[in-house]
Length: 304
Image (cartoon, rainbow, N blue to C red):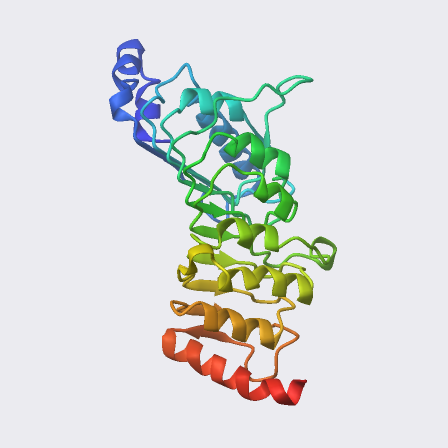
């Protein structure tokens, strides 16, 4: 819990002093110490929830711009209930929201969910998790329905999110999109389709794209990555980082996207089953990326 939160509990006057909105700009709730016994983790989780509840609209949040919650709560722990709409109401100037490795659910709001005001100034949302979580299209919509200025969206580990759900988001100029699935079981990485919905929507602004572990088919990925070669107006794609680790991307698709994106500085092709041996690795820097392109172009005739 931040110092101001603890100070506010001393007495009424300290509470008034610590509750001045101008003092609240960034809040970071740190993870519990590693190796704590189960009882200690349960207490830490309880304190974490209490801290989040303390930051709701009746508290000092109008000036809050950065809220980060990072915790090591394991997957068997009771999910935290996050009052999404109350958080939007109480933190209208929030620009960065990070819920890292946190098992959480939106707090139920009755039979009918009344949309909150959203986060109109939100530029970064990170919900990355190393374990299975409950983030769905509906949850994402509740968070971002009022965030047209979003620039970074990190949904690593959020296996329930679909391209159709992302397409409906109001942000039109997303620059970083991370959808990697790391360590997920085959049950959660079944073949999907619709990846082109992502690239067609944001190909003109994306600088970083992470599709690692996603189960899109060869044809689907080919359709999606082809969007970078047909940007309206003839402008060059901004893409400089592309993670395709563990996907079904083909040699022709990779060579096409490299040729279309001259600014590409990072390309991860590890564990890509459709690529020739010797090329399944990560490439860093323009020289390595161009070397990969040369090797792919050389191998293409023999693969046909």
